[in-house]
Image (cartoon, rainbow, N blue to C red):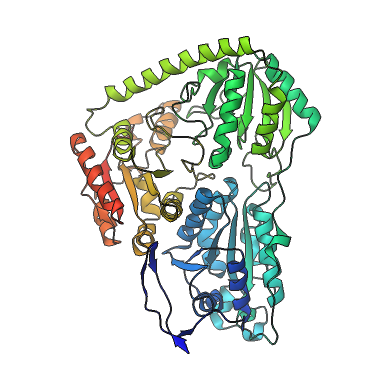
Length: 601
């Protein structure tokens, strides 16, 4: 008997259901069927991809063996979008993101997104097609689209890779890749499935290994002696500062972090592009760089790039001001330390002193450190620090509000007003902040409730991450009843604007605000700085930067992908009403885009 299921819309969005399939999922009959059974056993809900013949067997198995459910194919218009979508979804859920990329050319397209995920410590499983290994089975195109060691393209920035050549190895290597990707330090893994083996008929049943017996490594605790040293240092601190980084993706992190900050009476400061403690917490001094400069002890919790935190470099002469003073703060580093370093990339390899290293799972280490300090901190001294820090944070927030108010009526629209109006529009809506402008973000304005409420930055600084990651985050938000919200630059959006089509096609409700300064503006000050150093005209710094003449009709572009969109908003008084209309459209199920012309800073 054949059950005919028409394609249609489910509660969660467009579900492209195949027709003419028997009821129920039968046993795997082809090599790639087994891969789909493994993905189902791992409860993988989505498989973003750009189609390619090297995994045509897998594609067929997802549709006609798996019924396009667990996983469901998500068509993307570029491989970089597919990987970025999985990246954003993984950060929003804490689960393994999975994407498929077409042999060599697809992997080349997606490699920037793979690097972002590696720098961002995000667990991904990337499935590719390769070969066939048997030259007799290769079509002419297979010769130019395959390599002897295809994984070599990304081997230096994945945590594990494999190129299995048998059906049984498909299952084993997929489970191994998932196990490694989700074990500390996390990151992307790449498994290339031989195209010939994908299309082989199985001559016997192939059981799926039990995923429970291939679980990720458990969290590990810090060395007891190091934990005791850290507690002693913090107990004696006079001006302690706590900084939290990537632990901001763990919703469970806010409570123990707040408890530790309050116990110590410490000032708190977010690491760059993260938010773990609620914005409104009375000891949150994010935006006051001086608290770090004045600290005698800094506790860095899951700060991946500790050197950038302690000695941030501006746009001045290279190497200027990068040395920490000898009388700098005592550093207590609670993180996975250098476990994720690779010899190929210089990422996060800047030499930096650590006085006490708590090599540990950050969340587990945070709880153990609080327990170790509970009976050691002088309550009176902590209370005095807490009162001082609270007053300092209150003055900081007042200054931040005044800075925003001073530019509220600016024309063109100030970045601060763009953020403020967006916050006013969504503040009463259960939302997930998937993206934000980083360089011009006005601290203290958007009241983030703590860890898990904002997905952070790309990790690797690869422009073009934003659109796909936004859609991935918004997809995860949709599935748990939230609204995905983001603020994106025009340059980032235009590199991968096709992600909007995927959002519209799969009915992902979201609100995306485009901060259009008509420039790759981050580099304009760099050009001005070089010109100053060389005694040349700084007025020419705009050349080769401006996205103008012609100006891009971003709202029109978004509509062409099927989104709801506004015409460019230029009057600051029109911004609030435009955002409210967009929010209503998003709440009714649209991917809504607000295009705003904004001042560079």
